[in-house]
Length: 282
Ligand code: SAM
Image 1 (tube, rainbow, N blue to C red):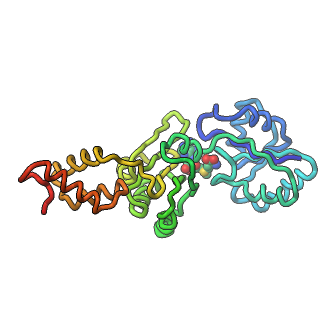
Image 2: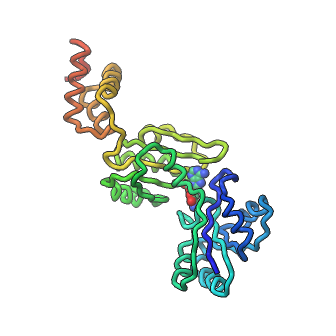
Image 3: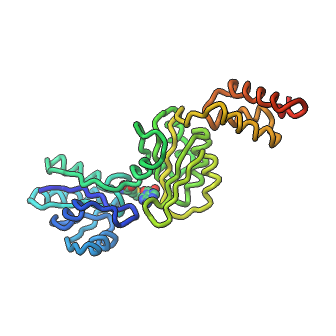
């Protein structure tokens, strides 16, 4: 009697552990989100374990049946279409029902889009918050983001391709222009890692196909920017004819520095550019 919670690949079919393959071969039943999808994975490894469907529409009703089979001594493996079951995927009701009946549950860990993205994001990963999918409705999405505004942990979101640009724009608006990383089609042939600020990424993502994870820096966790780089950026913006006040605001927003401090620096840089070309607009 054992419920195995088995991670499967999120794209690259080689990302499955030896233990996962053994467990999938040895259990009496595999409970799968989409049996056709999982059958292909099993067939690829010459595994012929019977499958039953367990998805978001039947998870509440089916959980007791599966728990009865476990109590009768069977071993069951739970898998989802991709990655780790229960992470923005079905599984919670079954695991809870099993735990209530003291049926042992064990993880067979492996891929998950969230940890894959975190592992390469280059942002702080000592503490993070997994937010999964944001609500589809704009005001609810913004409300949720507002709740995260003051959080200084790195944030991980899943997003659907048709909403990625809209969500990044809302994140920019509500959270400010923070450092972020978008992982697209991770582990697949067309894998992409886009790094930048939220506004840059929102502008860049015209490509709206594939699967996306968005990792956003927590409040105050924008990579520290040294004064020399600030000066270089300020000089560039002033040369483009931007006004001192606008440059200060832009710098303050994108680098999480106090506007009055950066404003002093802008004026200093403007002065250095010589009379008649101070760019300060004042
Ligand atoms: N249980 C899965 C896991 O452990 O990552 C997540 C399932 S959730 C229904 C599917 C979402 O995960 C996708 O919409 C996307 O946001 C993200 N995702 C899954 N595979 C991905 C990949 N290869 N690259 C980027 N994001 C991925």
